[in-house]
Length: 127
Length: 185
Picture 1 (cartoon, helix red, strand yellow):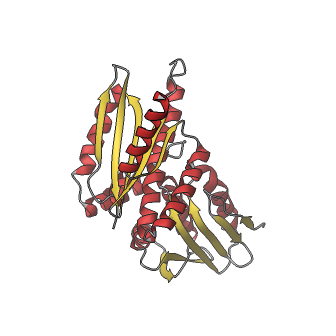
Picture 2 (tube, each protein chain N blue to C red):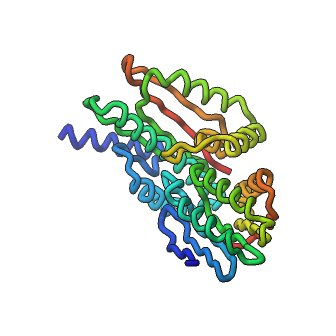
Picture 3 (cartoon, helix red, strand yellow):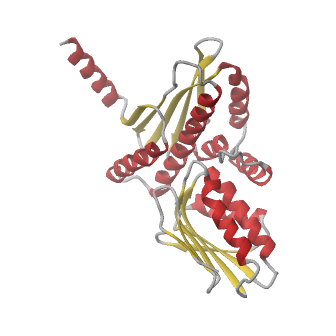
């Protein structure tokens, strides 16, 4: 299975989904007008990955800021991971936020309240 | 000479009103990136706290995308209308607060629904807004345009004050909608 490696753009985060390590990373800002277009291939990738996942799947969400269109797509992405969790893989989500960025921490807590996945909140100096 | 005087008056009023960014015209996808870029530089100059910076971006992004989606919708439905509707965005900076103003045309028949939505959102406190956001995030459907129905709630969550809005009816078809959002510490 192929990895996904995308450079970030002014409106979309960088992506690195590695089937060899089970690490799925999104980093940067996600503000496209229609986030569905951007997230669709990522969800497709998950569909394939779930057939032969690593023992542990680590989702690294290092988001600087995101729009509400992305917010819905991130939830759908996490929901897909929720379904995969426990089927030959343990899914862990690391939610990064910059020091004192309560808004981003709160956004992560919102997701934690909705989806049944293990979340860790990681404070960093800079995303 | 008159033309020069008018420009000078415009310049002075922009200065007096502490306008740091203004744009009137058609909203395109690339424009948002350019506006954010300009604002980033201005905020760097002003030494704006990064949390305020992010909130301002969040508000601008959502306002902008409301306008962007609206224009798409409008064109689609009204191909035959002779006027294309541009929008206006003005950002002011005063006493550490950023004031984001947007103005655009909406269809008069859509005004009551929008007005109802805005006044409902204004009755909610921060916790209630968070609950509404979560409910909509969890249960709401995303449109094929990528619209999640969360924009106004998100804007309200980031503002210091209530949403300030106004509608001016131009005729039975179109009205002008203005929205003012204050973001600060």
